[in-house]
Each structure stands twice: as C-alpha cells, then as structure tokens.
Image 1: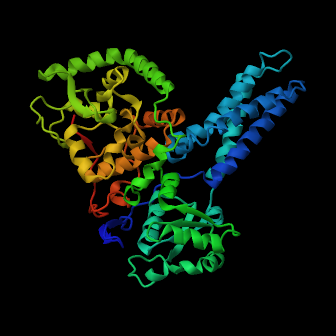
Image 2: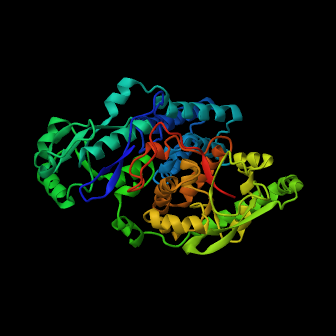
Length: 500
C-alpha cells in the first residue's frame, strides 16, 4: 500500500487489491433492501398466522392480531438507535429475531384479558418460526439479479483516488448496495494524473448531464472540490432529479460504521457542540453498569477464586494492576488477572497473542477474556463502564496523542470493558491499529445511546466464542491515518493487544 500526495500537500492511503484467494466479507451497512423487504414480510406473515390461530379457537377477537403488530412496531421504532446492529454478524440476526419474539410475547399476554383466546407453546412457536422465516427469506434467497437490480449507482465528486478507494472499500466489505460508476472533478482537475481505474465521467459544470446519462442516484462529495461550488452546481442542475448528495465522511459512518479519520477535520466535532447532543452520561447507563457488573461479579466469584489459585502457582500475585487513562484524561488503576510471568518487563509495550512472556494459563485467560473479569470492580467504582472506548496506558496515550489526530477526544466519555471498537476491530498493537480503533471510538461518541450499548453487549457475547478481529483489518482499509505507510496487502498483521 502506498501514500499518494493530495492537492493540499498532505498524504492519503490508497488501498491495494485483495490478496490472492481473499474473499470479500460483508460488514453490513445502511439497511439493505432484503432487510427492508423482510421487515415487511415478517410482521405480515406472523400477523396472518395469529389471525388463523384466533379463528381456529372460535374467537372473533382482533386483539391478538393487533397486539402482535403493536409489539413488532415497538421494536421497529428502535431501528435508528439500533442501526449499528446491521453491521454486526450476531446482533443483525438477533435484531431480526427480536421483533417476532416481542410479538408472540404480546400474544401470550392477551390471554389475561377477559374473553380472549389462549395459545399454547406449540402455536406460539409456530408464529415465531413463520414470522422469522419470512423476515429472513429475502436475504437467504438473494441472487445476482436481485443484487444488480437494487444497487445504487454512485458518482464521487473528487479525484479518482478517492473514488477508487471507495470502490475497493465496498468490495472488501462485501457491500452490494452501492456501485461506484465513476468520478467527477472540478474543471481545473480534469487533467490530473490518474492513479486508479475508476472512469472519469466529466467535470462539475457538466453534473446535470452526467447524472442523467449514467443514471446516477447518489453523489458522494469529498473535500477535494470546494463545497460551495458543488452546492451551486447541484442546486442549478440536480434539484429536480432523484439524485441525492452525501459527504464522504457521512457515507462512511452510515455504511461502514466508522469515521474516516484521514477525511475529517476539527469541523466534524461541531456535532458535539449541538444543543441536542447529550454531553452528560445517561443515569440509566450507570444503573445498567451497576446491575450487570454486580450480578456478573457475584456469579463469577467462585471462578475468580479458582483462577487466582492457579495463577499463584508460579509464586506471583493473581491480580495485575496497571495505570490507565480514563475519562477527561484522569488516571486510574485497572485490575486484571495476571497472564504474564512475574519477571516480565514492566515497560509499556505492545504484546502479541503469542508473546513468550504469557504463561500457559495466561493464554487460556486471554483467549477466553476471563482475565478482564476483575475490571468489573473498576465499573462498580465508577472508573469504567461496561461499554466505552478501551482505556490505554499513559505512555501509549502520550505518544498516540502526538501521532494520531483527535486521539484525546476518545477521553470525552468513561472507558469501557468492551466497546464498538472492540467488537469490530479487536486489539490495536500499533499506531495504525490504534487509529483504526479511534475511527470506531469517534463513531461511538457520536451515536452512543442505551440501545447502542445493548447492541454492543450482545455482540460481545459472540466474541467470547470467536475471534474479536473484524473481517477488514487496517491493512485493507484506507482513510485511517494521514501520513502513515500501512503494510502491504500481503503482509499479515498479527492479533495484538496492549501488555497486561
């Protein structure tokens, strides 16, 4: 992967091709067509089955039918807050299953109203299976013709390196919703050197004709062309067309679930100054932290005692204490089960999963993440939350704040045991890896909510039994860190985590 100079003298990453034999991975995105169709078929099918069951009991009541639809509609109202679930393999399915589950729960409760029919477990299970199968059918039956018909045709207003990088990003993510047709440049840039194979559709003053000729439905604009010039041309020639306009950073947030760090500047943070942005932490988040941390801590106490005895067999302490940087940059002591030898170096350094300093039981603890259980005490003390950006060591923070733009902004909220970056990226292990996680931490800061936290906690459950690393690693992703040379596509990046 190489760096390409931009018009302002800075540098940007350019993504290479997929490694030989590498298949693209779907990472989700904005609501897919099959999900939208399934979201309609599922409730209709379930409601139809509920109606048939009601008729079979000899009742003419419509209450079970309306209760089923009302419960599903209640789940649907959370769609905006739970949109990140579409980017996660486990929670995407769980969110689809939540609607029929809420529906059959409502139908089961109808029996407590006078004169209403009662449905047994078999009947309720049938409603659930029918509704869920109908909701998933469009996704399972998806074929090439379906994909081709629903793809949104995209033109990038900017240089071809941006269009080429976006096209490859979509391919690497396995996202079939968008197709980059080409790019549009300012008249002064039409003879700029090409670095990719994305076609040049024309110049900005031809935008109306380009949209009509290539059936463009979405224009994604970068900062390589002055915004006022873009808005003037769109208002002049595209207002009465079905085409829509989207900034590159907003597109990345919605479709990929992260903020393109190399494509934003300080103006991006104006969102946090908006009167509608909640700067204070929700009191319900603290209640959730205390309830879950106390419950899990009590249940896991016997396990912690047993693990502590096994760890102490080498003569060292069971607990490992390490300074970390918390909310507003304030330091605190983080607790973990010790996974390294007693004579391991105390200096801050990145540690790989096959680090020779890790003990035999330490490998098991790190793989199962049981070494993080003592951090529940940090949560109870209010130093951490269950969900939030992962706290780092002061030495790493000092260095990363100098090399990674806006790194200090992740300290705007309380750090967490798990987080959006953890379920999507895994562990850092380098400045580039830390910048990749920051792309997701900034996304969490902007979109955080109780529903989002529940989605992250649900996906964390999956990571206990599978690799935490996201399908697309930093080596395959552009727009991460300005001025840093990412490894070539064929150079593997080991799974890393900070030493502890």
